[in-house]
Length: 324
Image (tube, rainbow, N blue to C red; front, side, top):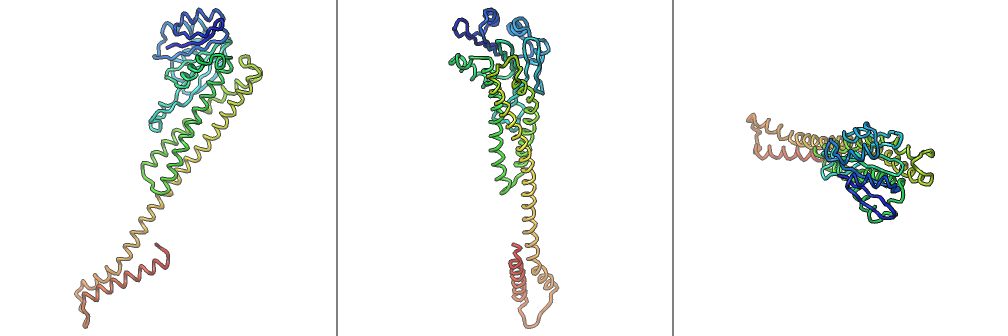
């Protein structure tokens, strides 16, 4: 699916037909944003018209769009810069199927155009496109402004995911301290997998953010450099926070193991005390089990009394020692 937005003679136009987009692009609309949602690994005729014929993108870049890229990257070509970015779009079951929440966004940036290509429906791009139609003069006032908004949403996707992870870690902290269960360990390991995958994915995007903070960048005007530096600052803060979270999740594993050990110790303590308290009973019953007759005593009452005194004595001793 293709969507494009641009302005010709102060008339805002949204177009889905590739041939009409190509025709209008030759009229020099100023700034054009084209969004392409690939529905298969084979390009349609309309998509080929735009990517190959109109913008003349290199086949290597287009191939990267068709096949998922595990790592982010940025490449310079004669008439454009190609960027592969990854972000987070959380699904309801993201903790179990985290890979489904990671999206890839391929961005072509050149003089007067931005082309975004993706194989997964992205809510934030739909939101940006809707805002661009409603407030064209604000949202589409320049290439730099739109590119900044796209980068900002990608970084925010990591931050919103991190907030949800923080909530999960706080909840797990409380649970594992009080009632550690096996399910809690599975949740912690899921979190660990997510955090380390986020670190691996996000850290590789550093080159792209740095590229757009350079003062000699031909695509970014001097007044917008501060915006992209702000994005890089957000990214750096987010990246460092992920390192901290990875340490916290490792600590959660240690807390879980400690809690399980404490719980096991309490169980063993109870069983030990229980077995020890029964020693007088075992001793007395074993002795009287030999049919020993004590003259002048009622053997039954005498045996029960000895058991009670022995148990009471042990309990008093344990209590004074503060063993329970």
